[in-house]
Structures are given as structure tokens and as C-alpha cells.
Image (cartoon, rainbow, N blue to C red; front, side, top):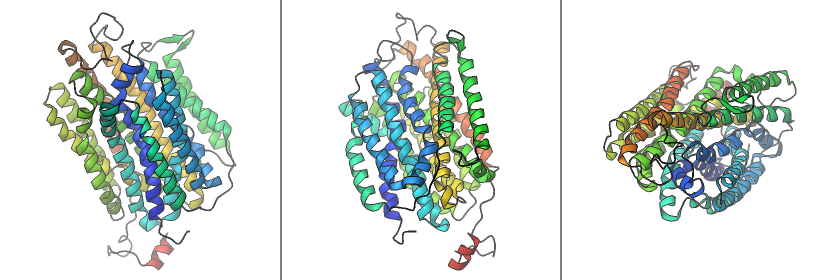
Length: 504
């Protein structure tokens, strides 16, 4: 291990990590503006949601192999290559003149992000000793939580000030700074030879794409036939079958599978992966209907809508480091279960306020609750998942963990798009396809007669992430008890160095 302090390297990586995670949610507040500029002639919301889903899908699929690339060629090199791809794709996104071009550019961004993300987690696992990893993962998890919440806030300010293009152009100076810091501060770590399961990559990509495409286009085709004999359910079913075949292939591959199934023998790793996929699903899916509600039903500008997220971002950022340090001293379940319950309660409160036509200031309350819940989810889940990973499996474990998180996000994006569209059809019959209905989802606030049913549709869509958060809380109850410093001798004091080494 490099004898110098690992903290400067982690802070350098956090800059780029923060940027790519912001791009997971920054588009949510800009979606109405992007739709007005690039897709003004339809009232289907699922078209513009592809701007988010394309990024997440291209982000999720390569993660299984990019973690291994970091092991093979060094986390620093792979991180820097990904950072260059991401920054150039950001320029392409901002220059896009059509929705299709923007979706393609966002996919390129996702590939760059996939190269970067596992390297941040692998560097923590390989440079921090186990007894200090909780604090490091607290910073990593806090960055993930704050970024997903700051994204809409920053997006609102940029859209109102300079236009939707600047949510992508802003990445250029940040990317340059992140590159210089990583080049100077991140050490060159030992590499390990790996084989790459390209068949597994192809199978996982095909399976995920079929499921996401089926979910996202379901409402547009009324859950029926898409073309010829191909139906929505057929696509989703085929995707599930392909993913099951992928699992079978991973079990059959004896050299180096993309997903070492042996990792899942550790119950904490397995359940933490379920937990982070649920968190990714919840955070990504809730922002889409909420931002559409604020801007189209309540008539808020992107900046005004984003300002309602300030309590969420501030509390998450302030409390996440404390949660990381606390996790080194208490059982992980004592943080994770309450955090997920609070998150579900915040979403339930959002739904109640929307349906009750509450004053705008009231939405600050569930925003604060979301920040409180976020602080107790991201870092603790990452620490719990990686606590027992050996250095050789750091890249693979980080790749699997980040893949499940991103899969949760991309499925959440697709599922919420389908649910939003179906609720609009139910609450505003004819508005999504009738030219003379009076509903125009690309031209700002809706007229009062349409604003209320539109709000109802968005509130009903928010029920989905709330249910997923509750299910995640139940799953976290089954985590293995966390070994604590005082468990063996009864005194809750830091372990002497010799004993810590023997027990690790």
C-alpha cells in the first residue's frame, strides 16, 4: 500500500464522481425545457425520459467489466480515460439539435461514467484499512447522496439562467479540474491480470435493454403489440429470460466470470446490493414526476422547483460524514432501516401534500426528511457491501455493487415513465394524443382545469418509489450483525493495532 495518506487521492476522485452522479438527476428538472426545445409536437412524456434512461442504461451495462479494467490496467488510468470520454460527451450533449442526438450523446456520457465509477470505490477498498473504511465510504456515500439531490437544484439554476444546454456544458471546466487533480494525487496501484467475459457483457446488455425498452414504451403501446408479433410483455419476458441465462453463464464460467457469484455468499454483500438497487430506483424515479408536477401543475420555474430541494441537499451533505463515522461503532441495521423508513415516509408526505393542494412552502418538510434518510443510506450501504472484500476482488465487487445501483436507477427511470404515462391516460383521457385537448406538456404551466388531474397523476406515480423504499427497509432487517470493536472484550474502545490486524 502506498505509505502516504489516502485521503487526498479520495478527494481528487470525489470531484469527478460527484460530476457523473449529478448527471444522473440533473436532467430531471430540465426535462420540461428539453421537451419544449427538442420534442414539442407530442404529449408523450416517455420520449424525453429516454434522455435519462439512455445515460443510465449505457452506465449500467459496462460496469461489470470496467471494474475489472481497473484491476487490469490500474484504477487511475481507467478513471482518467473515462473522465475524458465523459467530458467530451458533455460537449456533444450541449450541442445536440435533436432529441435523438441528445439521447446518443447521453449514452456516450454513460460509457464514460461507467469507466470512472468502480475505480473510486476500488481505490477506497485498496488504500484504506478496514477500521478506517467506514469514514472513507461515508465520504463516498455522502457524495453519491448529495450529488443525486444537488443535480436538480443546479439544473434549475442553469436552465433558468442560460438554457438547458448548460447543464452539460458546466461539466467541461469541472472535468478539466477533476483530470488535473486525479493525475497529481491518485497513486498508481498494483495491477492484476484478468480475463474479460465478452459473452456475459453481451447477454447482460441485451437483457437489460429489453426490459428497459419494454417498460418505458409500455404506456405508448398500451402494454400491447409494438410491431408484428412482438409485444411489450414479450420484450420484458425475453429480457428476464436473457438475464437468467446470464446468471447460468456466470455460474458455468469457471475462469473469471463477470459477476463472481461467490461474492453473494456473504449475506451482507448480497443484501446491500438489493438495498442500493432499491435506493437507486427510489431516488431516480421520484424526481421525475415531482419536477413535472412543480413546473407544469404549480407553474414554478426550474429554479423555483429546484430550491425546494435545498433542505434535502444540505442535510444529506452535512450528516453523511457523521453517519459514516457512526457506522464504525454501531450495527449497520440501526442506520439503514430507519433511513429507508424515513425516506418512504417523506414520499408518502409528498403524495399527501400534492393531493391536498398544499402551499408550496410545505414541500420543504418532506425535502428535509429525504435529506435525513439519504444520509443514512448511501455510505452505510457501500461500507456494508465492501467490508469483507479482499483486494483482488475489489474491482469486481465495486463493479457489481455499482451495477446493481445503476440497474436500480435505470429500471426506476423506465418504470416511472410507464407509470406516469398510464396515470396521465387515466386522469387526462385524450390529453396525451388529442391535438385539441388543450393539454400541452411542452409549454410551461397547464391551465387550471388540467393542472389538478395532472397533479393527481404525478402523485399516483410517486407511490411506486415509496413502496420500493418500504420493501428495501424490510430487506435490510436481514443483514448480518456488524462486528463492533467492543464485541469481543466488552469494552467499546478502539482495538490495539496488533489485535485489529489479527482479526482482519
